Amino acid sequence: MYQKTQQALQNLQKVMQQQGLWQSQAPDEQAFLSEQPFALDTMTPTEWLQWIFIPRMFALIDAGATLPTQISISPYLEEALKEEVYLAELLMAIQTIENLLQEK
Image 1 (cartoon, rainbow, N blue to C red):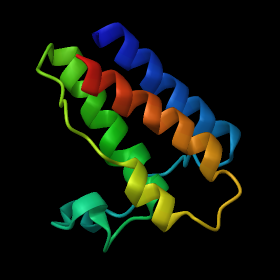
Image 2: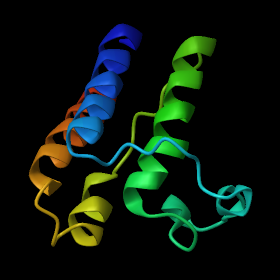
Image 3: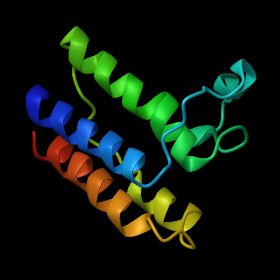
Image 4: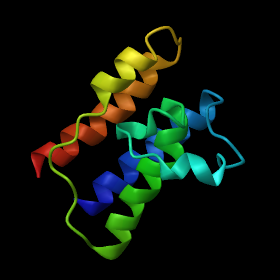
């Protein structure tokens, strides 16, 4: 399970890089202090994926911790990024992760 999830996360990162969404510099420290879901008030959806979701998932895998079984990121991304041309490709990568975690 860990290996499949790690591969799916790496694929998400690759998709983001291919679409020019991967940033070389992290947002301001204050952005990480958000208490809103998905850091709505301080980060874009793709920043949240890169700087919070992906690192936290890798940290869980590295620690051998229990992975979440109920995640639902795709509805948020569908709404927040509905105008973006890269949405379909990004959603495929996210939904792969969601499906993997829900299967375990």
